[in-house]
Image (cartoon, rainbow, N blue to C red; front, top):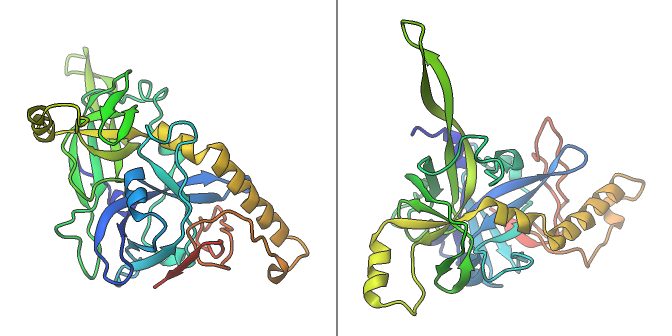
Length: 324
């Protein structure tokens, strides 16, 4: 399955250290539309990755459009949002994303239009056996002058209607895929290619069914390879690691965080501040110390995107972050 180059631009790499960068996880950006036609951006990664980062400073590496050395976005005291009703059963974490150097980043956003929501998958030709692609970090080599994501491919293997046991989490609602995950792919976006079915005619004019490859959709996020809880025997766990099955957090579970009550409240706060900033009050007169935290420099401006230049002038947020 040939992937469009834009898929490689959907990810950034996470480093727990801001002084000696050593990447250890992956994340990606999803966009939520604003009433004016713009969008708020959200950085998504695995909850277990966010838990490891904790409240300590960390760095996010993303390639630049000019081909220069990767941009490092330094974040401190970031507020992560987890699933509003079952945080111990959804391995996903979300934070608002608004770096001042957004226009320089070689970054491709994933919009809600490309979410593979479960109620839409059958009618769009997505299901068991369809090809998937995981885009993320290869910890053995990621590049120096430019970041190089790795792509691992496989197939959607199971759509269980029951929860699956998972190590360090409550039983989870996940998809299973053929294709083992590796360290560094935690938090990676998982794309699925739809199958397009249509009828064709042979040289005698008789119709026959034909299948082809369609568009890519965001199926979810990589949790990790199949691991059984500690209550299972060592032999069973060894088999689980080697069987080549990975667990995917469905996009609709991530969407429940992005559109959960806490994140909606935060976006409402920011939307209100945007509206005030477009009125008669100057930016220097605006002070909202209780506005929730997001990934962006302190004192910078809230994203004011337009349809023509989608989020190219992100210049505000309330997070202690600086870019290099």
